[in-house]
Image (cartoon, rainbow, N blue to C red; front, side, top):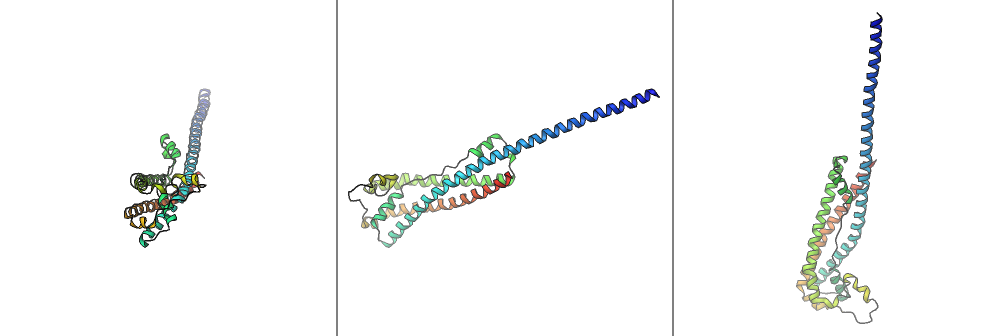
Length: 240
């Protein structure tokens, strides 16, 4: 009987020790999982904060470029109207025609999304957020392509024609900030003559193409800014 009592006592002791070991292992696993989840949550917040900062910078740059683009569209439309009517304000026309030589380019900030991709942790994001990010950067790429086309047209078609035919108007045309260098110039400014413009059908077509390019870019600017604002709101929700 004493032997059985001794064995029974050992079974309880061994059983308790085994249970304690199992519980300890389970607790260790739980703590490790919790720690990994906390690290993942911290990583997600860091990645999303960087991406959100990039998008804020993108919006600021796009809004600044929109001012330039809206001015280009207004001036090109005014010139086309003048061609249709056969009458020009020579001062406005000289300034507007020169202005359309200026190129512009949007530089999307990808440092945040690139860091996330390079980390191999895209799985940290929800499918909805991942899809919205893909849409946003696809639109940005499309805008860059459009601007390359527009800038190529300026560089290869519009600008060479302008300098071949209206170089004297450059300082009044406010090309590349030249106007500031002549603000105290007492000499009479060179204006492109109205009849010269009325007869310049090639220039009219060049301005028309500049207008079409600018309007196409304007539509993309609006779409990207709207998508960027939606994306920032979605990121904010994901960080909560």
